[in-house]
Length: 127
Image (cartoon, rainbow, N blue to C red; front, side, top):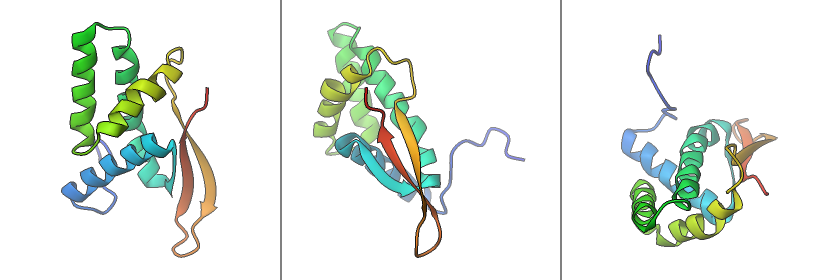
């Protein structure tokens, strides 16, 4: 039984898995859509939505709360994420200011030719 077991292991070591998630979330925010497998998309979708919610809630706070939220997002995305953090707070979060949740959508594309893995398009909802 999988009591209190959270997340997908994706047949990778812990370091590889966390770096892959950070990279994929950065690519999602940078390009606003990515094409990946269903399992990888389901593993990064909650983390991406939590970061968008953090950025959206920071807009209503004071300056200290805004700086703290930027630091939290930068820490969770890792090194060299300054442009992505800036885009998240200045472009993506204001777009979802009235939306309560569900910032991303999964569109199924069908199986991949090589290994028959289910492919999806993970994109930010346009509003």
